[in-house]
Length: 434
Image (cartoon, rainbow, N blue to C red):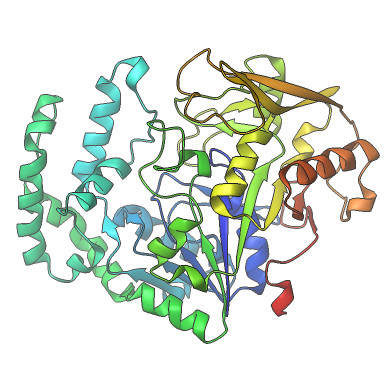
């Protein structure tokens, strides 16, 4: 058996889509195990650019089976829209390669409205900075056991009654926020055309994934967001509503943890964050603008400008620990080209002394922690045609080696450009089973 988890090692947006797409050349199955349409994964193939929000990133590989796991929350309209976009691009067999867990929860229009009303009415210092896609309210329904699951789309008459009951739980909240509560019948009619498309895709994702692993297939488990946005391990309360760490893969895909062989952590050569919350290494100057513009640091889903800053090694060590990361994939190294000096946060000064660990419980209180930086010389060489570490300029190679040594995790891959080919592949997570 051979199952690999791909996880974001920062605040998300690390470039997981490209890395999954590269490694799925060797994968038979790709399973998305958490999150919803707030997680846009950008795939660049040749001159074409595709952003997927719900579909696993392996969907561009014609021989790869793609599974949407039970840990996800799925907006039917978004999913059908993505399927239709791929069909328009010539991927006419996309539906044959998809399996949607009948236990995944469904985002409905009232989830989106509640999410938007909450964010719009919250004071600035209490807003989370969500994408207003209904993710949080849908997970709330799931946890309080009033959620609607994909399997409910099979019987729309019964679905209407379930929605009516759930709306009763939300009515007071919506009215207090100035919204209006739709009728269950209206919701069902909105969902009906999507249900007709999605019901044929429903199945037991847990069994399908476990069967594939037992049969010796190569399975890639794809997360969403990043470690520091995990609901348990992130910078709470400025987090997402799901488990973004590698442990969530077992739950969200419905497999035992002993089925997982390798954890691959994706990390940018710098750091970004979307939304509110602490970001100690954030740059609010010309260098930050350089990273944003050269790196196209705008949300794949929302096009919101991402906050940018220097690489945070304590944060990366923290991610390596809580995920059990076996190898790193370093992305967007080329974005640093042109900077005279590059800084890396190597420690933090706190009221309790200096630490090389991430003081995550102190981060949400402004002014309690101060990053300690180490400076590196920059470079001006174009990296996009580099295909081996030996071809990297000495200054670049030193930077890459420093990251791996300080984190204590080897590099599996280094990305030097946005295209699939602009990559230095050092080791496949499936290499030992090739």
